[in-house]
Image 1 (cartoon, rainbow, N blue to C red):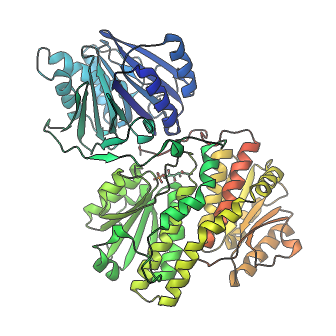
Image 2: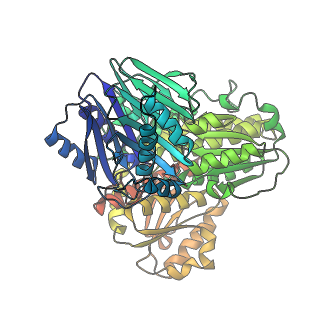
Image 3: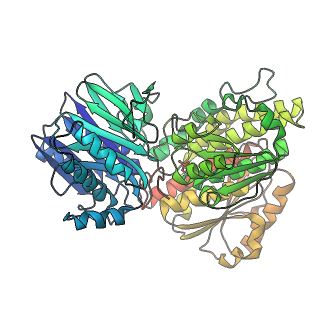
Length: 614
Ligand code: F6R
């Protein structure tokens, strides 16, 4: 949510900043801007709309500075206007700042600054922080480390979350960064240093990076960098090699990141499970859970906390883990869990799932769980993310960067990892070696099965074309396919803006059936075995009311002609892996549905990747 990139080096900053912003655009695409140090002042360009608008403006102004900061915005405080676009300059022109996050007490600080005569030109909390730094900077005239001290004094007065990059007109070779609750890292190149909210901003230019911890400040200078605590003490700077490649973050032959990531799922799933089975092939071994075996054996309850798509993955996990390990599982909206006083019951483990590892609601839920003394485990794709650092243990998804705003490969990987967890916990309890082996084999078969579904992308495009006029759609499934239905509906609505809802198939009769008419298609995800017949009966109820029916069904399930208008077949499989196989066609359906409507699937209206505000 919003992206920051800063450059200090021996090359002209413009190109590096624009490249970085293009890579960060998935974090926010309302407006973008850049500020360059230019003699003893700043030159600033700000444009509403996409990064390309800013790139065009900068091609014309052609700034030659080698020091600059840039930002792509997802609006929180204030509308999408040039005035609200970052970077912000202080009223005296001394300070330039880009900011991710929210300063909660900005109104009080703004009143304070207005009493001192500061005039504001935007509605943002970020401009308040910028002026607060300038206020302290002015008061510290003649003092050593003046900008750093001003920054520390200003941040000490702020409540809320921030990742910031700051320049000072008086200091042509200095950039400061600070983080609390919003990611920031320093990229270390040859003769150049970057500051960014996400490593993708400098992939291909930089191999090593230092991730800031919450409450740390980065001081970037021409001759190197330092990491300090908020108290101004030296902090440990741990250098990590960035595992992303240019191919990971570039589109290649695909039209969109969403499409690329859907098609990456066989590899993503393979990487997620690779090397994570026990030697005898009957259990799963998740390194991040090592050391917690005693707690895992004694577990009385698991509580998943997550948001959006990640929460749907956890809901599938609830079915899988309860079935395999017979441990009671609950799934909570992270945003609800953090404010609820849920009773403490026996040995409870809290599992937080988050692709980015930076979703604020999920992080706050984890912090709350830790205050309550519960074991916390993270499932995340964000290497070095806040979630990875703040949990007692965890499992990395290893699916590579997910850039499409609509989550796809992260979802299927999270479901697979929940299956692995269910297998590991199950084998610690009643699951026999034979059952364990069957499940391990089913999980290992996934990449090939997913590939075989992806070969039928054209059939799904035709189905999407057929239903693309629909403004209301229902998605229905039972058991572990119910959260799959929820995910199918979420995917469709977030990228196509059609209204879509997911329900348990049997719930249809308890209300939603009133919506059925020839303009309201129902998409059923069908189980195998006993329950398939019941879902087919629900399909017939829809057909009897002239509702169009599309069924996503395993090959082995016979569906009478009169029960469905269209059937898309997925391979027959173990129950544990069917949720993943059934999801793939729903992702492709949503993708084509939105493309046929001429929409930009990577940058859906009002959305941004990684929600780092409440
Ligand atoms: C939907 C989507 C969101 C995210 C949610 C949580 O396609 O991407 O619903 O799943 O914002 O994000 P993470 O997983 O990063 O915590």
